[in-house]
Length: 346
Image 1 (cartoon, rainbow, N blue to C red):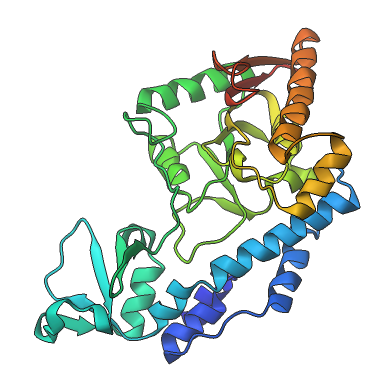
Image 2 (tube, rainbow, N blue to C red):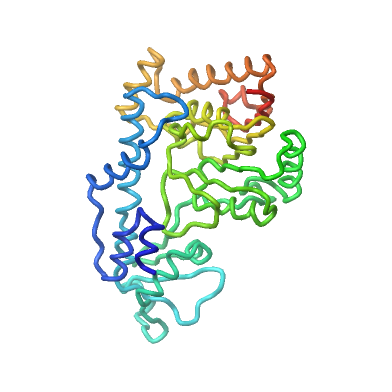
């Protein structure tokens, strides 16, 4: 079971070994970079990138994975962890030794290694866990795992009928019954599992940069950068969705271009497009200054690049290739907001 889990959670063998032994081993940067080059750059990309763009993406991935795979919480979870004998069903509170309330150890017990494996690698349990230290408490999963349906706007859509009607329309226009669905920035894949529960006649694909120890169910997970989708994605997907993930990409405009290229004829994309959290690091700054000379910031440069990408979409609409529908305030907010794209022809 442990060896199979290591193969499935290929980013976390060091964490699994740490749970079983009680000693966490940080993953060396050289090992992370080797994994990045082998998994993220071993294919022909859908959109050709420059060597500089590839280098920037590689460095970003190495830095991000170093943070995720070597974060302090993983090390703490390998050490003795206590759990209350009478917990509740809404949350699972676990404690490092010096955070057990009032030192009343009679009410708590230590989690065994197998119990940790069962808990940390099970998405339904993992998403409920809060790790309690002496003066702090935090979720062990990353923020942003959103459900498909939520009436308060936290999810992708407000009700299940909206999703079912969308699939019905795509089937009518494409003539395809078994639809391929892609969630860009899927996180743990919660929304994909929700989709499958609502309609079993879909093939679910999740694209995310980083694997989590616990992942919800999807037919396929693609651990990739959205700017570097594989050529095999061309015309593959009948529905593409993305909720609040584009703002974290290095090159959101390239990711948007890949989205359009990945749509099948009759397909539909619903993308929350923004770049308001774009990195301002110096390495990226030099790149954007070459793309948009005189830009005061990476954000200002992205305004220009996003504007060019939107102009291309508007031209494609005039040519009858797509139907492009941005949200009402999209242009007011410098080409940021919800974008809906219907692929009419290649």
